[in-house]
Length: 65
View 1: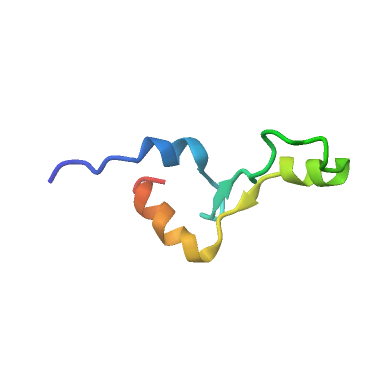
View 2: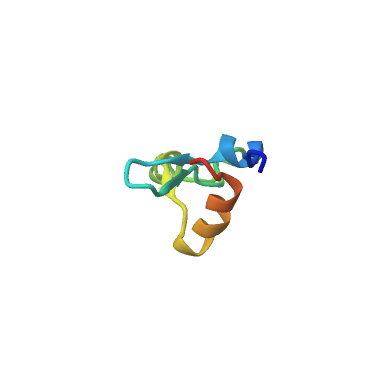
């Protein structure tokens, strides 16, 4: 059986933590930043974990992660 391929788009967006969860970036930090306050912008810059409902789909896209 041939090797499974990793979805490259997913590999660029997610990374695996030490405990096996998936890390992701938060949305809304690309443009229209003037109306967002500094506290909100700082929070958006931090990473988040993928929700448990989506984790199965991400794991399927990245079989060797």
